[in-house]
Figure (cartoon, rainbow, N blue to C red):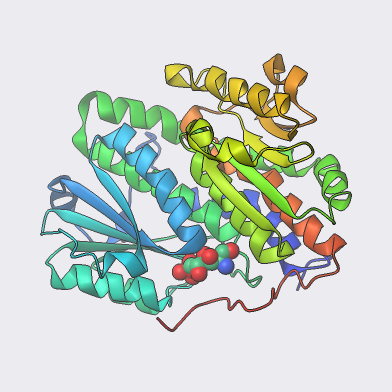
Amino acid sequence: EKGGYATYMEKEIFDQPQAVADTLLGRSNAAGDLQLDDLRISEEQLAAVDRVTIVACGTAAYAGMVAKYAIEHWARIPVEVSLAHEFRYCDPIADEKTLVVSISQSGETMDTLMAVKHAHDLGALTLSICNTHGSTIPRESDAVLYTHAGPEIAVASTKAFLGQITACYILGLYLAQLKGGSYADDAKQVIAELQDVPSKIADVLSDVSRVREVARFMADTRSVLFLGRHVGYPIAMEGALKLKELAYIHAEGFAAGELKHGPIALIEPGQPVFVIVPGPDTPHGLHGKVVSNIQEIRARGARTLVIAEEGDTSVDEFADEVFRIPHTSPMLQPLLTVLPLQVFALELSTAKGLDVDQPRNLAKSVTVE
Ligand code: M6R
């Protein structure tokens, strides 16, 4: 069942081109427009939505953070992301024009389920992004958008995360399409570009030997930091979570812009820091700002492990290691930048002789509050 791989997690990492392709499959028509026939919610209801609140836990919440950037940019609807266990107790504001989107691989996470029920009681419209057919959360929601990542067995989420991000993109682009005009035109371009992403994921995964080597040499490392900006920020958080879960190493993800507001004090000679570099064409000069961050931490002795686009030579001078990803439009980059981080955590866990598929103290689905 592990398809020749040593662990489920490794198999699931390498399943990711398929997971994304299957999540996209059958959701656009010949004209390149999204068609979400299985959504169980009318276009009129969705078109009336004036606020989106995303509820999720753990890795699924990081998919939700990516969704915030994407939905706000494409559909110009305000999006809030709330950890499901916080949402319920913070007296949330929601009404019938609020779309509460839950994201859950298992569809059984109690915290997320309770948030959905609470949203329902407030009169909000609830939509579940879920990987498990027939599970509780989609059953309790008004609408459902299934991710088709296939069964995920390893406790640490990988392919379900990519499926979740893909489904969030589909939702954001669909909301943009419903708005019509230039929103719909722009969405159409992204929908077309998304079709090329599975082969780019396969490209990255076809050569991860250097990430594996670097990880193996770091088995004694006690702390790793992750920096990202814009959609790279949730990916930095996800890279850190994977490392905590799988290798029991202290890890923290930061928004790169926060560096000088505190975390830079952590940098001492030899401190490993992963940096996710936005593509050079990212708006607002973010690429240059992140390259400057690499320079700043390198000057203080950090060991810089950089994830950057192919052909982006601006990072070479300040990087101890560069892991390359193919070019995509900035919003889609998370589907690629997370890959080296997943492989890094997998390999480091293996190098430490730990149980990759069943890390200590964790359960695949957390069915208690
Ligand atoms: O099944 P869910 O997506 O609702 O699970 C949410 C989290 O418990 C889950 O993503 C957790 O953080 C994973 N262990 C991450 O690898």
